[in-house]
Figure 1 (tube, rainbow, N blue to C red):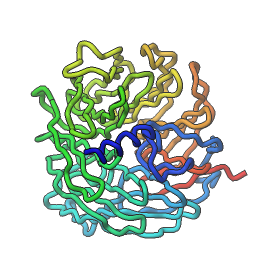
Figure 2: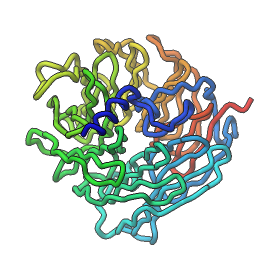
Figure 3: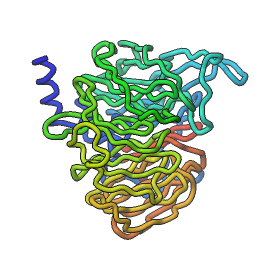
Figure 4: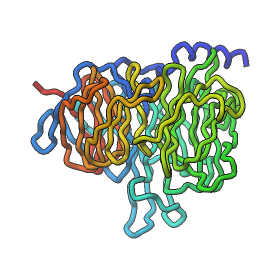
Length: 422
């Protein structure tokens, strides 16, 4: 216990940083801050895949998947699911891939798990069998395929451990990504039958703790949330939003420190944290944005919700906070800018298309990517200033990765490296 406490105390100082992630790395879903913020200064503002504008390379990806790419050093990692036969319920090879970030060359492509089609739950038309985004840290790659398995590989694709104990009945397939928090891998497991949060030991994949989620006895209990680790009063907690409740869990024991009840389900957006507040979306049917003070104990529904809004709140894309403003793009393509402290809307703008990917901030600009393959760039600020509209010409639901002056975008069939080529 003394050793682990020391580890967590040291990690708390570096909260949000992967141990081997350089300044240009994008090692997990939503990047090194886990909240969509990049310190890149030279990302391109314009691109066009059909015309070849600012497209360094395009690489066809076998199979299908909506996991977002992650980039560490000179390598890109992602997952995919390859159908092994034809028909409505084919067996699938669940795979991890590694590509050279400079030229897109495939370095390795390995099978992690084999999924039996006859016993696989049906998925939503917008989901895939490889939707959770991997995590890279300290020479290890963590991949998660929901109920089909979780594994740790080395960066040459060799298996270190696997865990297939996370059993539940997924509604519409799997979606939430794992969160690496110190020496534990925290995963939200919210099926239609059981709902729980679990922490796996980084060393061997064994279960450190597993705790049930409070869903207040409501129906439609499934969700797809990616947890977010934050530090409050010197203590690390993991915020996870499920159907009908959001809680902050102690990262060492799994104890639910606080809980806020809500009326949503099928939650996708990852929380963000700023100004002493956690911001969560409650998703379907009507998504509500909650700003919660995470320093309470027990049920704090009536005492710690600082403000709430149901105006153009997303079901799928995660929020983004830059300074004192909170930005969001709804699934229906309405972008908003709010005051993060009180929720007051500065502007609303229909930017076109439908959205699943989460926004990215870099060098004063906000990048959003719609499902039709169009990227919209606008200035961060209290007035809407559009900078550019760009196209890759293929559907995409995955979120951006930004690394070393380039953006990496996954489409339905390919992975693109986009960078200024002047």
